[in-house]
Image (cartoon, rainbow, N blue to C red):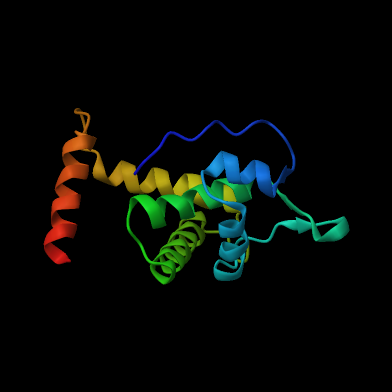
Length: 140
């Protein structure tokens, strides 16, 4: 189900339609995710129009990956995002400093993959993915 998503253009704000195309989900799904994930707070302007910033687009892509590609439930994805944010806060060492959402996503993703990669050789992602799907099928 993993699809290649388009690159995010260098813009300050994105409409809900643009974000839907960039993230491969429908606008009504984005509105639903705003209710479920407190991290998503797009700016609202005239006529209640939503404007997303770059870090929110990255967050939506991360949520999409957790839900659609990794098979998390909504509550599981919510918990996973909170765990990643907590790891980032503990790792930064600055008390009271809240990192930007994009920093949390990018650095936490890097930490996960860095821990999985053995030094000196590139992992076989397709074999690993196939094995995970087999494990999920056994658990179902």
